[in-house]
View 1 (cartoon, rainbow, N blue to C red):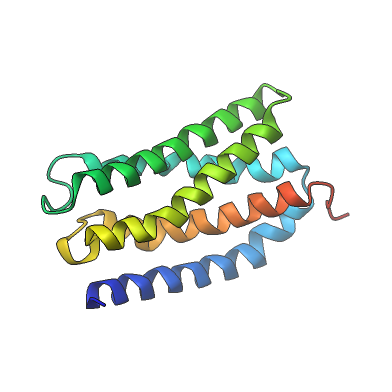
View 2 (cartoon, rainbow, N blue to C red):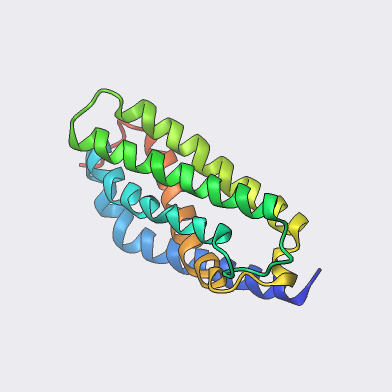
Length: 164
């Protein structure tokens, strides 16, 4: 295992712990009192920024030695999640009956993408070859979207659990 992978793993793990602490203390109590659409709306907006994953296919942003197919899969997975998050946000704004189905689709695609990224990045040697500025995104933004995904899934599974 490369030292780069260990360092990024430590950064991402610490990031998730810090985000979970802050989320549990400040955001979750408030979100739990909201109706489903009001609770997930700000979290979906965060996921709309997953278009940042497209950076993996921008020339000269990551090492040229990273397999193009692997970079493309990561970029398109994140972009798909961003588009589905945006579609769900628009459904909420228009009070569409498609909100919950879109939220489920977003959750399946978004979590599936997060699960797939690890093996793709490891297989492509991303951590030993250099991911440039995306390192910061993986270490800071990824923990936020992981926690947000967890809460959105929680609300989908237990939609009627609104605290008084």
